[in-house]
Image 1 (tube, rainbow, N blue to C red):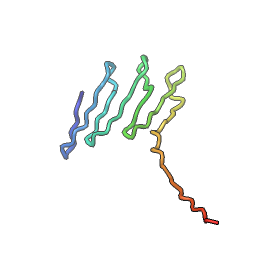
Image 2: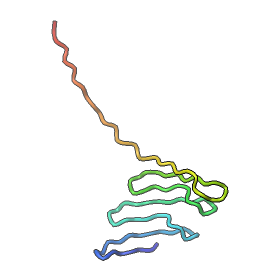
Image 3: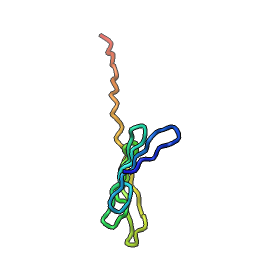
Image 4: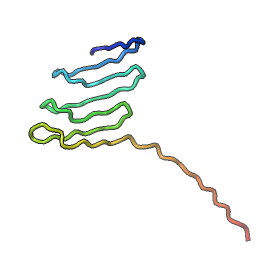
Length: 88
């Protein structure tokens, strides 16, 4: 793990895999990013600070051909509608 400290003293920590690719980045605010790689060393899946999952697809030459994002589901909102029925 390598830590980088900005002029305000806040620390960002980066963990690397055996191929020296960043796997986990921890920011001063406590948020994290995670990266997962294929056996060939290509970025396969990443999870950003907001929890969005991004899948990376490549062609046979290793060029990115598609990125698919799956944002975290929005918490469902419960809407209550009050129905008033007039008495007859």
